[in-house]
Length: 175
Image 1 (cartoon, rainbow, N blue to C red):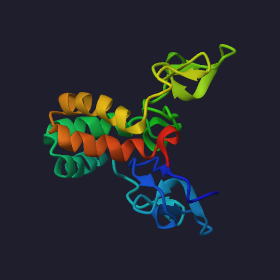
Image 2: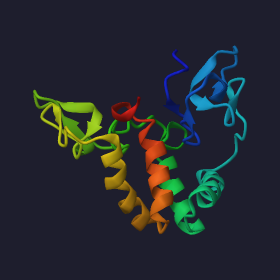
Image 3: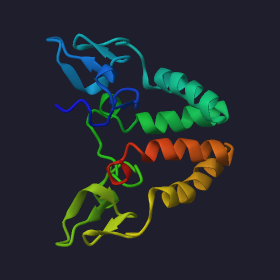
């Protein structure tokens, strides 16, 4: 496993981009699914935590970091957590361009042959190509940040910071 590739912890949603971010399996190997805070020696560090408790913790961090009202941050966190393997019971792919969960067949974009894309959503990718092929990462930040600010009741500057950080973890925008 390439622990230098960015993965998302399938328990808390933390981006795992360096070896020390990855939890460990019982045999000492890095976990491919879980971060060091959630998973050690093949077991969850907080085995009885609920999705609501995890959303409370992550929501409080998001609220503090990005000036999101606490209730909205917790709700957003729970929505994001519900797509992770620990809580959904399966790993749900995310669009490699915008990050939208590909939870249903109709969420997926299409390849040139009409088959479903396993990498991109229907809004970003159709008929084997991006719907906005010339969109740059910075333009994507400018496009998504105001929507995020409006939906979460946060300052646009903080939304810009949050979206820029998040997009940098997605395959289309990695440098």
